[in-house]
Image (tube, rainbow, N blue to C red; front, top):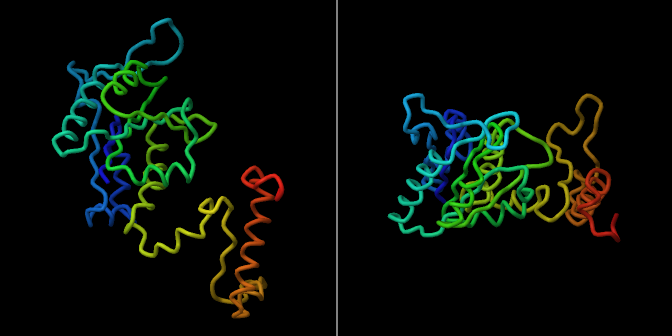
Length: 236
């Protein structure tokens, strides 16, 4: 997968050099391009924002640097034979990001993340982008961040780990939270007794059927207690 990021803080994404995603980049599973929006400005102050039409607090990111940045990325995509990359703008006005969406996006050939700041990006950037390729606004949740970088990093982490080969043991993706619509069951390791707290006996029994039933019961109990809306009505 090719991932491009447009941001005024390119150094934020140095974390992508470490852990599983860093290894995925080294092995060629993920191709990453981080683009500094200020490189696409034309004034000596490298200005990326201005006051909003209609008044109001804060500043709005100007359209032209964004247009230049997206044009450059999309033109390069055409040269590589990718004709419909997906542009994702993190936005409180977008669809809420879920594990199901992460799974869907993990099959994309190329995703371009546009990290807004201040009071957002001039709406005409989104409208222009839609004339060139597919565009999706995505919200990380019902809260506001200072910019799109944190949301982009979270989405890249969730999407990237679903790309075949990124996670060493694919089976570990099967039973984790949200993969089945339920939250994950609690996990334990050695020692069997730690500071007076014991591992549940069923996990030491060697009875795989009983262990599977216990884990499912734990998933249902935890989901019912913490996220009941994830359950079908008859199980709540």
